[in-house]
Image 1: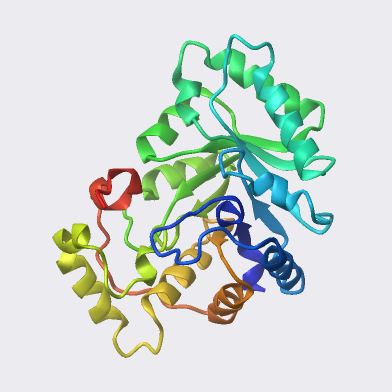
Image 2: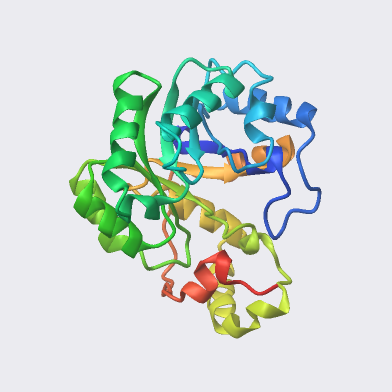
Length: 282
């Protein structure tokens, strides 16, 4: 089933997240409903992070035995011995799981610093001692990933990838030559692709929105449905992370997932001012 490529993103479980988020943090009761629905629809992966507020703590209150859980650890303090390992052990305890499917660096530029070998050895140790099955990075730009691939062997990378974004194809091809697992996040551009009326900051890209709307017209699918299926049907993408704030939203995503999909004839862009939410001014 195509839904088996989906993974639950949990940022909304522990914090207010996303430009289109109208309800704030997800109520724990709704988290349970979301996990139950995921479990019965071939969705068996959960992505979280120590920087997602109380997300790990919230998830740790539930039975996660049917899920592969991965997390991201924050900036490493090299003055603390084996800090990366300590952070990983902290996540294991809070999440109440025996092993993490993966551990990613939330600050991957630390692998490009003069302490990179020390940090990488800690990640290798965590994998060797079965604290986690895979190690990798959560990146923000193709250039960042390219530099890391030149220096270290990683198992997995998480990257922002969506229907508008034409920046990633060369480095994804390179990663696949190294047999690296690729997870796509921010596939709705933090919810921007759900919004019919966008904040004024995004007026600079009116031609982009017009071209996308023109392509979608007559397809009997919303823009966000195209964005979802575009990622699900990219063979290079192993998991597609979707953040949801209700069971109805997850149900919509599952129902919108197509077993067959013919992508739009749409000219993608490389403008990081739009594609990187850290550059937004709203």
